[in-house]
Image (cartoon, rainbow, N blue to C red; front, side):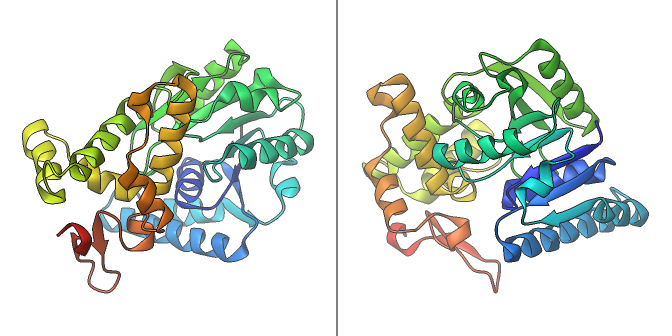
Length: 295
């Protein structure tokens, strides 16, 4: 396995392209937006330079990693010679099904089709292709160059051979792959998102403020980041989408998204990426403070 295509140049896509390129793979990074591709490459370069400055990699390896990445706005071009395609588009089932149909049509026989989805059914995605046995989940964690876990999710149809191959690929990326089965939220988000949702309910019901909720979990439970700030970093729209997948998949009231989360997403207060969520983020000063609404 040598040639990798990554579909989607957002935060996760550029991180996935980064780790493949840094480990010697030839990567084609694809996005319909050329500005998004340019932004992704700048982000990859900055992250590599930061690693050089911290003496985690050499300057030579940084330069080789950049040379390993080619950018394209053509999905057909991206996947036509790929051994593995990793889709990292937005967390929307219709978008993913559309992309997978194109990936299936244009990629060569024997190419493995993976998705970085954090909650959507791999079995459903696999069923939209002519090669369901070659479809699998590769759920990287954010930030991808730093976080060690890759949740490897088998669809109902995924073959043992494809699963074993992806487990080995993840290890070659210096990651720790853990195999799980395809149920709503898998393991990571089935556990994490209800906790975040409960933290939002705790704020919504006036039990405590943003600062208090996050610090109870940091100081009392040894979490490196409080659940409300973590939600901001994930993106409140993504949190809502995952809760909706859980609610739809399990049909239980305990998975109902908190009304405060629903309203914040409707108001486009999505967290760090929009500059405001439960916290307010300043691009100029890098300051972080509790959002005025919750102060």
